[in-house]
Length: 142
Image (cartoon, rainbow, N blue to C red; front, side):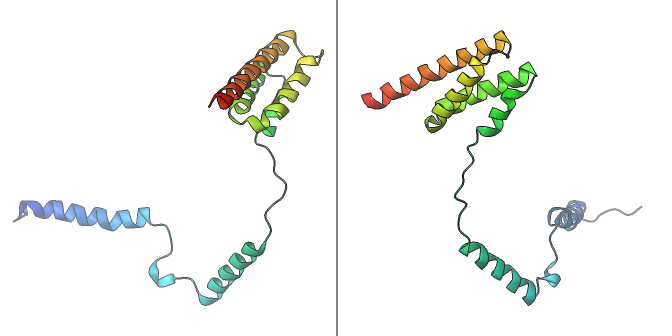
């Protein structure tokens, strides 16, 4: 049975083993011997230049529209979550508040929807209006 002459030699062997194996686990890129070719580098540079010349997208989709689609879902839990999140967005992002209020009022006024859900929407409409009123007064007071 072989014994280590230095008690730290086992620890050093374990450290070197971990260091060798962890590099391959953590680094999943190509090894240095296989760097990108000149042709690939030129293609990357050309694509980057083309992207820099491209105009920015003029159309902007507000983030609440995905939530607004969930107002049409029959599931009550999904509806309540959507209304709750829309109300919070309206309070935080006041530029979307009028559109969100319009959506919720449209839902509230729809007689084909369940009364309980329409009342929930109405409570959130009142919540938004009181929150916006509070923000307007705090801005003018400052």
